[in-house]
Length: 120
Image 1 (cartoon, rainbow, N blue to C red):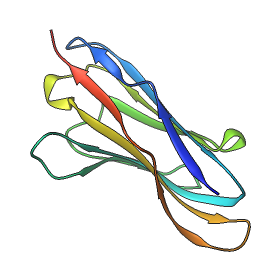
Image 2 (cartoon, one colour):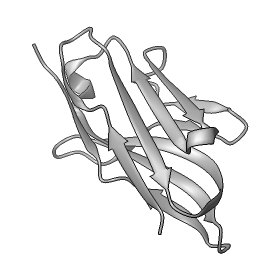
Image 3 (cartoon, rainbow, N blue to C red):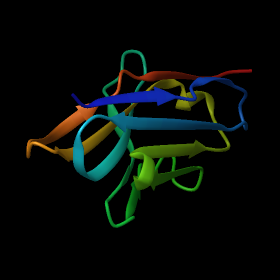
């Protein structure tokens, strides 16, 4: 019923920029937190950035000052603007929303992931 679809991944050079987007579709009553996680090969999945329904943001120390998370509630969308990219940013990036469906169910929903590769 509810699905999250990510877009915007790809190849960037060190120092470059990418914008990731994630849009939810389906019968949604309310979206609370919107988050971006990433997982590099051989590493644990880690939280990159989060934004609350009130607009408060939180970032991993490794991306603070370089990445910006924003939300567009009219379109059930979260964006991650990534600037000054580094090779260590290479990972599969996943969006996840904590939301309440129109039928009252609340829980976490995950996108399928989008590959970000930073290499010269």
